[in-house]
Length: 445
Length: 179
Image (tube, rainbow over all chains, first blue to last red; front, side):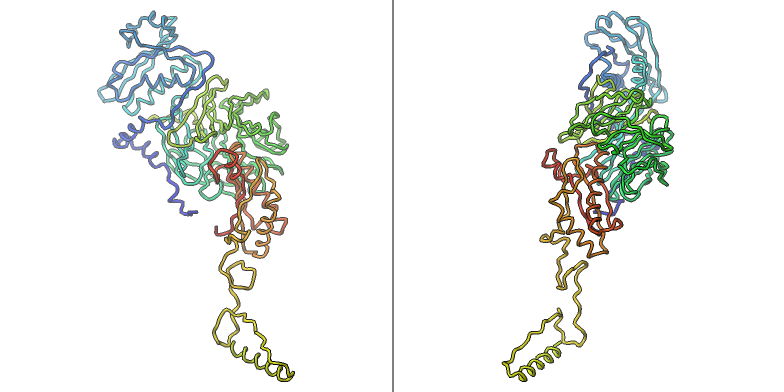
């Protein structure tokens, strides 16, 4: 086993230079090329329930722009399973200005919403993108958006437009400008990658020949905590995505795993076996002394802070099997949360703090379920057979998870009302342990 | 050494003469690996670390395929951490070796098959390593010489997805210091 870590670990300097070298056109050119290929392909497999029929018309001058916009918007909205793209073929003059709209064309196709726009090149070489959203039935303009972007920012602009349309029509924040992290295994190599929510622009932030596990975004989206086995055992690391620097924050005797951030980003709750049996400890996010949350003779592990940061939800084997419990951070008597099934693990909080996603195991089948904290109600959302590692989108609508079954690891996504399901797969390797990044981490450059 | 041999043989001859018995030569056991004629005491056998017998042998019992100590893997039932009876003698062999070689330390690496969440499998791997630790502790090996760590399901021995593969992955591996 090699002890030469510098040979086996490469951190994301490419990632850093990418963010801070906009003047280097060579770097940008490479970025544009890689942007054309999605690492992950995402397919909607189920979409039950109401879909908003929306017509998205190609923008004026779009074909001559360096990056197309409307196909990105259409793909974004279609991928949510909440929209049906209305066919635009057969309309002789597709409108790009309000005066050109014939609403009857669109009511006859059952469209409820219409999106038109145009791209104009400014004197400074940047592009102005203007978009209008219409209510077809009422024949009035719902919203107008305008952006100025460089060529390399056009794709991010399409994501922003998608967010605006989504919010106007669905009534909640969109997630198209967010990013996801995951571990990609190709042969013997493990890559921790960060990609746009649509699977484009994957960036490797850590590459290693020993397993990388459980990436978790800091609440402000600038850091990722993860477990690495580079020291021939589990250790917890925090890596700054902006600087590329990484710090080992927990390497106690025995196992160090399952890191989870406090809502204010100052602490991590981790599982440590240093005191002979797995227990829950809180450590500063920069590393340091471990404070045990609750002392027990049974295995306590796999914890997460609640939304307000006051309590910790964790897995305990104190009643036989593995069940979810909740306890104040300051300590106290844990209260049991799950009562069905003998194995409930991997709790992850929803952004609004009301729902806990977890992995429910029955016989040897793993499925993603949610527990409503206020009522105790449990809903099983997926079928398995080996679904693991749930992670909420920052608007709380969708749970990203890992499908471990069969030969090829893939990700899945399911809406919390279980009506929409997606499969995300990579052509080049096993994708595992996804983590959906928070708002404010757009890869806009 | 030869002087010693001659001296003994002479004593035998003299004894034989005294007893009027036919001369019998008693073979002197040669305890020396050396064949020099120096007068220094015969060098003691310097076996490799951990040798139990006095004979010189170059094979490390931990790596000798004929020695149970070279067997380093204990397998488990699904979702269980009990050390099965078929592995008792293996545990005893390693405990005995550690008892006689108090400078050696071991690392117990616990693993699980994929049919559990990744976090649960870290705990299951730990429980298995712990079970083996307790088994050797009962036989006198102190905890300070035993490190237990878990890899969960993330370092499988077999990358298949059937019972044969899973059975290979539910295991604890015993590694000695320096391995």
